[in-house]
Image 1 (cartoon, rainbow, N blue to C red):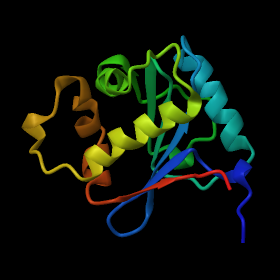
Image 2 (image 1 turned 45 degrees about the vertical axis):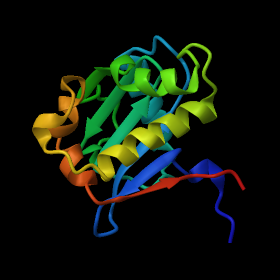
Image 3 (image 1 turned 90 degrees about the vertical axis):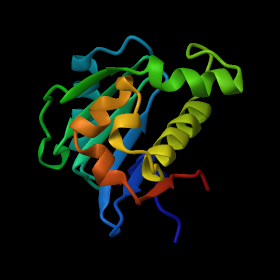
Length: 156
């Protein structure tokens, strides 16, 4: 059976026991305000065709917006965490030789997938994590994703 791609997240992560834990929407728009991201999230969730998860991450080349316990919030609430994406994405962008302004949606999605895989399979103690990513620990996302499985929603 082929799933309807309009009802799929760009990326999702199940925790170590197979429960959907994180859903990710990737968008190459820059300059998206927290209010704009909240409105987009609300519009997406209003359709009701997407599976919900405790963590919702909206990724832009310059910002990450994370909602915690997002499965119960269908309103236009602002993100729990608003983060500068540049310190997180820069090493990946540098490796592939592209700028955030020139990256394709597919490439940005693959970079985010790589970053998530590093979190999922990390054996580093919390103290070794770069300070730009302490929010991953503070939000509980690091512990929730450890040992999990990422799903990349491929186009059939």
